[in-house]
Structures are given as structure tokens and as C-alpha cells.
Image (tube, rainbow, N blue to C red; front, side, top):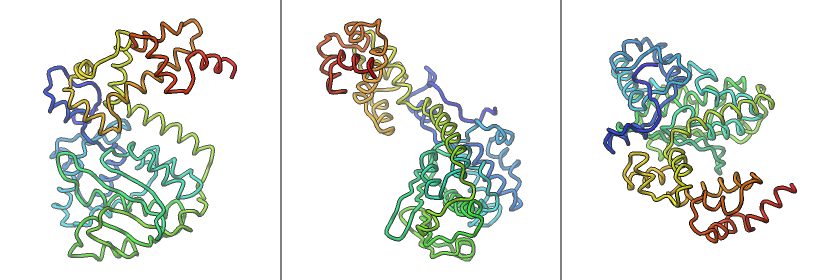
Length: 359
């Protein structure tokens, strides 16, 4: 794997807090999606091997399924592609390289779904496998089903080509799955209306709204709810499992997971303090709290959740006494453990253990 490829793990002890933030919070794109971008640009005559070298990227890393490229590198790639091609609509080229592999395992999960509606719901669930630099949602609006995308930059603001490539690919993929052209009811694009709007009209065959609050494709309900010829329930379940395992590995790089590991290690010594956990992760308390908030939790919530999950595991071990479990969970007073447990499960630890033994 080339040195430019993002790797995940604990920040080095010598790094400053700002440096650690850049490393651990860097947004990335999967090699499979980057490969799709490259193929679409190469079909337009661009020399992506030369572009990768210019941008400090290793072209061979595109063949590494575990590699992830920094979002800012992809932003620079789009910028240079527009400069060299003179084509602001170059993102639409992604429709020319449609294949499930561009969406990684999420693409195969979508392909084996019963309907496009079910497939897009899966795509939303697994979108972070493709890139963690965007928010994706799929919901029913009065005018139809909307696949809504918001691409985020990292240190650099995202290019419009990045979002337009995603919309173009998604629409072309729908046509590939259904075996017929699919025309949206409406297409929303965040960017300004370009001087030459013809490429957009020619490709989307739908009413276009520029300067929109987000990028989106809006589809007829009938198109989204029609059975897919590629549907395969057994394969869908298999791809769900693979995608879940991938996300679990991906989650291990998040601060929430790292902090949980530290909590598990510190709990037998007493209730861990936020300061101690932050020090173990080489972060300031303020940065730790902010990172946890960005991931949808807080230190106190994470501590409570970790204790609850460990309590369930310990109570499944009949040789462990309730007193031992209380101390392993960091409770100096067993009565505090009993109160917390009743709050978690609405029963005492003893009642819980008896009930589980019967079940």
C-alpha cells in the first residue's frame, strides 16, 4: 500500500492535538469509488496516471480493495480534470462506467435487493463504505422518492463534480439494474446553473433545479417500488453480512470505539474520568468531547452504555458474583450498580440473571 493511502489507528504520542485531529478525522473515499472516477476521466482522454503522480497519489493503490484516498485528494483530482478537459460537466462521465463494484459491497447489496426502494435504503445504510465525506438519505416526499446527497469537503470545499458524478452514477445504475432507461421526476443540483446546461438536460431528461439546498434525484414511486430482475434474497442477506462486517471494521477507527476500549480497560480500577480517557487517546478533554459529539454520543452516555453492555456479559458468567461485577464496572458502592442496573433493565441484576437462565 502506498504511503499516501489513509491508514487508521491511534495517533502518535508525539503529535500535536491539531495534527491528531487531521489524521483521525480525515474524510476518505474508497479505492473502488476512486477507480470509477479514474475510469470515467480516462474515457475522456485524461492521463490519470500522470495526474496521480502530480497529486502525490499512487495509481497502483486503486487495485487495493482496502485502500482509501483522502477526500481532499479527490477534490484536487476533480479540479485538475476540469482544468485539463475544459469540461465543467465532466462529473457526468461517471454514468459511462456503471458497475456494482464502484459502490463496493454496497453495490452488490443494492443489486440483490427486491426493489430500488429497498436497494437505496441499503445504500444509505452502507454509504460510509463508499465514502465518509457525504451524507445520503432516501425518503418519500409528496412528489416522489428522493435520493438526497450532501458532499462535505475536508480542508478543501468539495467540487460540484463530485456530487454530480454521484447523481449521474446512481441514475445510470438504476437503468442498468432495471434494464430500461429511468427518468427522474426532478433533479436538484446545489451548484449554480452552468453556462452550458445542455449536457445536464441531455443526460438527466428531467426538470433541473440549480442552486438547490442539496443534490438529489426525485423518482416516481412506481419506479422505486417495481421488482428488480436482479433480486436475490439469499445474496442480499450475504451482502448485508459482508457490508456489516466492513462497517464494523471501519467503526473501529472512530473515537467512540477507541474510547470504549479505554473505558473497558480502566473500569476495574474505578469510575474512569474523562481526563484519563482523553490522555490515553492523546487528546485534550475538549477535543475528545467534541469528537464524541460529532459521532452522536457524549462521554457520560458512552460510559453508561459501556457499563450496561459489560454488565450483560458478566451476568452471563454464573461463576461471577454480583459484588465482583459491580467492582469490575467501576462502581465503588454496589448499591450504585444496583440502581444503575434497574434503570437499564427495569429489574435487579439477580432477577435478570434468573430470567436469562430460564430463557
